[in-house]
Image 1 (cartoon, rainbow, N blue to C red):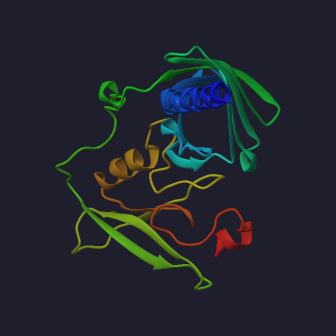
Image 2: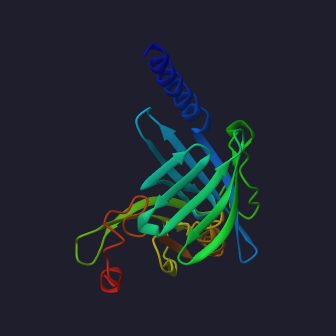
Image 3: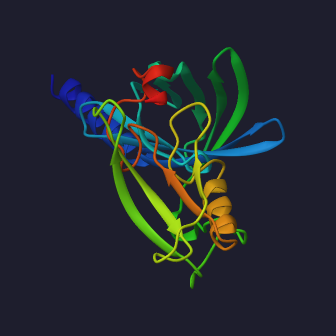
Length: 227
């Protein structure tokens, strides 16, 4: 009986050590149409169950909750059901997980490395505007036409004492922030800066349910967006 108890205790200690070793953040990059899309899986274990989140820095996404995390020996499987996303890989026992990323009937090889946050550097984006600016930039909010949603944005104006032609930047499909951040780029910020320095007032704003805007993007219709 003592041997059995000792064996069970050792198994419990090993499982705890295993959880501590694989817990943490793991980064990789998908190659989609010659574009690298960085992904970071953040895995956590509270000694009873696994949980985690997914970040996609190049798409401006952070903290997407994993709906399922399964780790058995060296096999790692994570899922985000609402995105039809599954990643399955094999941990080498150290700093590498090699596996397959599947989403929307597409399949990609995805190699993950353990994240050393001290060595992470932001990508260089020389096109992003930097102060001092030759125009005024004001954070504003306004109410949707049906009065149901408050939208937050940035208004750039060359001079507060004059009237100027005005441009409103509208994002494409899907929930996006006022800069239309994608793949680490902020095209709406670049466009707003270009226009404002040439004498136009420019408004850009977060889609409903994003950033400073209220509402829920997923249940909204095209008619809602028109309002």
